[in-house]
Image 1 (cartoon, rainbow over the protein chains, first blue to last red):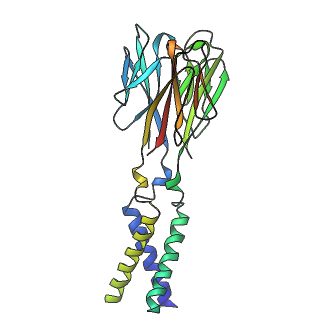
Image 2 (image 1 turned 180 degrees about the vertical axis):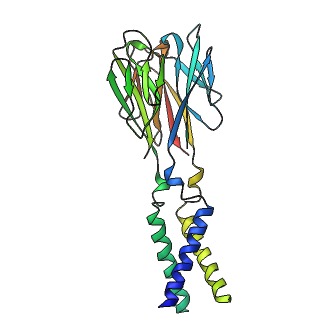
Image 3 (image 1 turned 60 degrees about the vertical axis):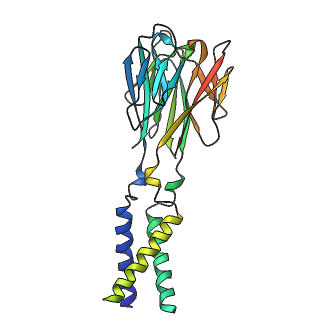
Length: 90
Length: 90
Length: 90
């Protein structure tokens, strides 16, 4: 009857209000996004809010480690450039 | 009383309906998934919907960059294979 | 009137109960987190619940592949160390 309809519309409206406030609607659409940060020398740091997923080095060097959580460090001697691959959730 | 029970069951049902339609239930279970794409030559491209998190190269080469957003480019001369590490949210 | 208020408060409470049970509230805050796992030799494995996004190798080697889904394999001969970069959603 009309009471049932009224109840459902109140519930519908209230649920959507709460969900919108929680910004839940957008959460299923989150994706990964990555960018490269290149710096001269043996160090390159990812910007705040991103994480290092890998590093590349000059002179063909493939020996690297991540320092301080978000900085690529290329280990070979005489490194002329270092790239950090930096990713985040959009 | 029974009116209260009826109200709660209507609310329960309606909320679950809305959440299911929004595909929210599955969102807390999203995880990262990665795969490798290897190609002959100096280029390898991640498929649509994935992002490059790192690259590997033939002949021990560790110098690479990411071109056009989703293509690994191994920079050493004479590259015989290139692998892109490609990740996405499930 | 008071019936309307009562209805809204029941709906509010019920929706929050359901959302809390689904652990949806925390989902918009999920982020990526990565750590490095270094091992002697040519293999290094990411812990359960994480994925390999890239690998680093000793002796400047940049040739690697991912075996069994979560193990970095450095391909150059005489590899003394292998690092796996391991990421997950928090």
